[in-house]
Amino acid sequence: MRVAGIGFRQAASLASLADALARAGSADALATSPAKADAPVMRALAAQTGLPLIAVEVAGIATPTRSPRILARHGTGSLAEAAALAALGPGARIVAPRVISQDGTATAAIAEGDPA
Image 1 (cartoon, rainbow, N blue to C red):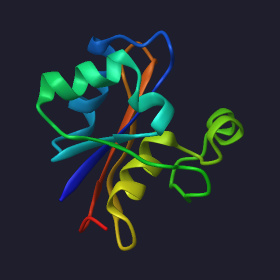
Image 2 (cartoon, rainbow, N blue to C red; image 1 turned 180 degrees about the horizontal axis):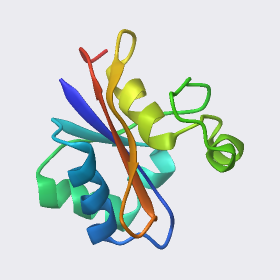
Image 3 (tube, helix red, strand yellow; image 1 turned 90 degrees about the vertical axis):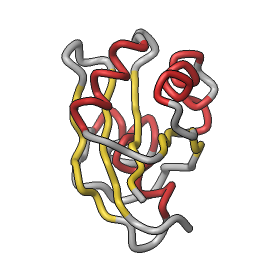
Image 4 (tube, rainbow, N blue to C red; image 1 turned 180 degrees about the vertical axis):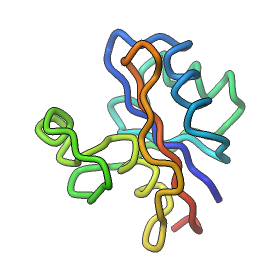
């Protein structure tokens, strides 16, 4: 199974999230933090893609990418990478590292593995 982890700024649009997802690649589900899963733009992305949306805790998950700003806010180096990994559980691996939407307001990463 492939899960796309999604991170985004408050100003991100549906087009921004869709752009980040397209840059990352195909997935069977979407994942993000619980607070972001409730955002209308995230729900709109799930509806547009027809993919299930998984809300996961991301703090403390080691990621290949390390953003100091995201580390301070979410307790992980990349919200997108951490969400993708957390949704799949132990043994998951990043197959598409974090990419950024053209406007810089959304990120996506793809992890692969067996759901926990």
